[in-house]
Figure (tube, protein in one colour):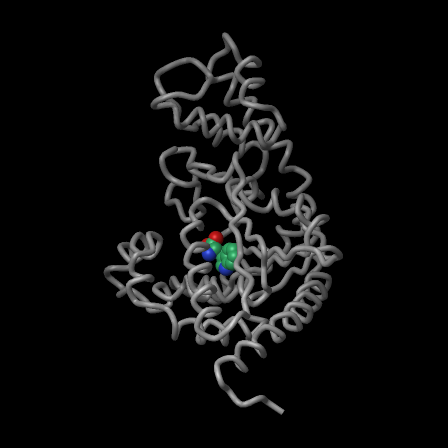
Length: 332
Ligand code: TRP
């Protein structure tokens, strides 16, 4: 039997953080053996907010190198740049025509992001972003889409758009399921544990970059915001500690109960140091591999070229069906 399809991606909108790694890529690595996986670098999505071209290109390489440094294996998974597969834009247009303005206006991410864009004007790209994301997923007939909790609403609209298209024109699309990990789905800012850890945080102490040096990582975790209590456990008003427990739990494979026992009677200082060391140690091999890959652009090029070829082959199959259903004349 054919393996089930998985598609996911990250935007190259900054250097990857510990949150992207623990919440996303680390889980993807485990899926590669069981599923047919495509992992994309969503460079077209990055254009929904202003980008400096030189930086964007650099970050695209960085994200690819980080995917591989984290353990995504180009022999097992298809790694590619979204912009290298023109079918994403083509399917996106077709889906746009059966999407309602109201549906897109209700997206919480659009509402949040458009608030920040008030003085520059709100871009149409930001508005139609979920349709492009739906196209990303539906082109590959993905069964499962591993994403963080913040993307759940985008998955829901993808399902709505796929079902609507199938109803209007006949079955073409597989209806995808979200796949959200229990622990680590939301790694929060170290400075404000009610907000998601984000590379666009204006305070660099809020996030750990995957390529931060060990001393920097340990320092940032030492400064992590906690509470005025002393116990290392979950509870009301203990979002900071819970976030650190999630990070420690994923880095060390220990359960929350084991962590509570390990730090019983110890202070926050000891705990934060332990988390810092676990993160610094866990990221060390990734940083080393990343540096090696960034010095080997030829290899990266080989990987993304092969990735785009396979992705295009799959995508064009779906797009051909869609165009036929829509009533376009077959290309000869
Ligand atoms: N919107 C996602 C994010 O910002 C990235 C993304 C684009 C994506 N297309 C996708 C994720 C398709 C999963 C599937 O994180």
